[in-house]
Length: 111
Length: 112
Image (cartoon, rainbow over all chains, first blue to last red; front, side, top):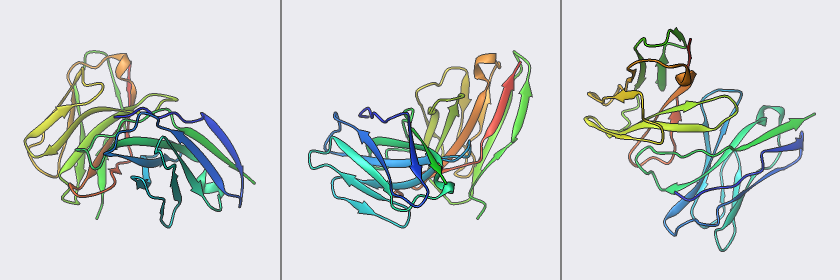
């Protein structure tokens, strides 16, 4: 699985968009970008995933660069409940239950 | 559906003791996994299973055993507990054609 690099921490004002970057310069053609988050030591929660097109769901948007070497997770209107550690993971789609986590980005949403 | 359940929630062991962490899911998922999370770190994969009777090692398998006799259950056995195994343990499951893993609430284990 390709390695990912994320900033260790970020702050965001409540109500503003939170943009979380991820570098994955060694990503292979068949690897997807997944995002999970972990709120205060709970089990991680799936957010979104994508291959090469931008994706949007009820939680977030995922923007993947054309060369696929980096991506950005966007929380459009961050709330205090979005304070969490966000993990960017690169892997082959549904690869047998394996997720390789990095250090993630600790997002603090402030009032 | 209860989703992914884990028992116990908390456990204290002495060095050398053995125990089994239980994990069950009621979503008929083929894939199940065990992770550990040490303070300030991301999760690390211990063992995983792609179906009943099939298991494989993850990143940090030493000191742990697993088996998968049913689709629903995936217990994790600590053979001889060591202080280095003090951690929070998460179980997860996913469908073969699913996009996401569902995680349990975790078991907090302390080995003294």
